[in-house]
Length: 329
Image (cartoon, rainbow, N blue to C red; front, side, top):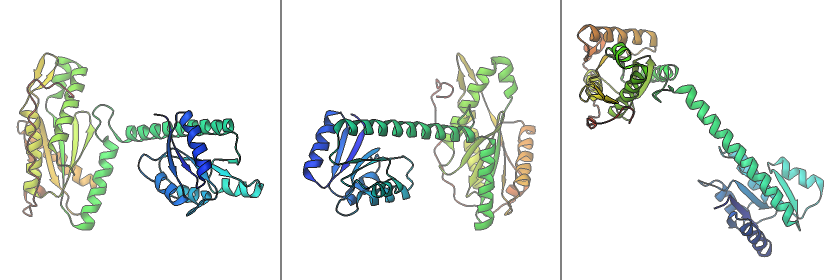
């Protein structure tokens, strides 16, 4: 199927001629008879990327359709070609100033129309590729290249945002620092490629174990940060234990090796302020306690441990990956 093109023309003869030409040129054609219907089609999901609009139509005229379309600032660009019987230069400039890309005067030459459509296809294709490149660039700027999780800067921005929301709305908020136990041994014994596979698998399992509204990011090296809204002490403990079990209960397969991998977790609660440094310091202290207590455990800092205003937490079933699961699957 070819490029989707909208024809908006109230004249039956002109519309049939356009349809026949575009069918012969292998375009995917949508026909409407007035400007109101044209605007609806152009604002629908998967809308045509090229539109041929008659200047004078019932409902909205061609220039009005273009003005509404440009004002909406849709993410995907629509190339608009105006058809008009007007030859006055002032009228033509008015149409172009309204946002149309080009125009043809009636009666038009079919080969000139085809050339304009090819230009429209190139512009639409270039815009789509540019948008794809921008989207990929934005993703790379906010996500870790190995695990696909939020990177350090992005997860800290999310934590700051949630802390400010917590202070403003008096909601509960937990923060959990996670460290892969004895990660240096994995790199030393199996190589850095195996270490990367372990990090990728750990990230995937943790993400699957968290609630849909939690945030997970790579904090640095083998450390991760979980931002857990709506958590009192018990809820925070439950989230952290669920994450710990999802790693410890099933070995991670790396090639022929099965690695008994564990994590240590330090958790704290926001104290109602928006002091991100103090909160992370408390979580880091709790993580230090977890590692000094034999690793593969969860420690709450003093503030979280003393909390008694618990809130409900979603008790998500633990994922049960098969023992043959490969890293990063």
